[in-house]
Image 1 (cartoon, chains in turn green, blue):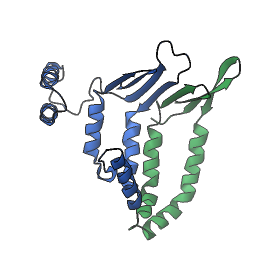
Image 2: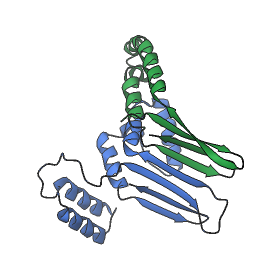
Image 3: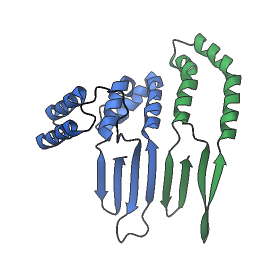
Length: 91
Length: 140
């Protein structure tokens, strides 16, 4: 399933870190809008350059992108060292 | 079940696993509750969903790195599909870089079957490296 929330951790000096949960629905809506606008141009580009690798990529980019976004749910990255911390969790 | 038995035998003949390990796997296969089931499309129980990478400082090391990564295996499957669209000149560069590291791999020739094989074998993967940090790589 597609993830609906992105949790990020914001570290604060001498205080407990702050967790922020961002709604991804807004990102997906924006992405769909951009995709709809780009679709005719990509199809035209793909047909014109079908025999080049980028032509094929233009045709298949949306399905490929969707398959990656669809499976993002459950991805969890938490890296911490002396210099800082990265925390991302798709739920 | 027949394909799994064949896969174990292939792994044995390739030297990937020892005779003892093959025996254990074959025994586990014959004892599995769904081994007699004719429906091979049913979802496998205990099939791994995530690749986990854990790095923790070893005992006594306070300032080591901490890593906790969980990657859905379906995301790896989806990501590897992009490999088919790597341009030829980049594939040559990749091939050279792999060779320098002693790896002979061609991502463009990676078929869905190879991928499933790789993921199936990841199921049994568990790496533990102990030094300044304890590194664990496994599927769950």
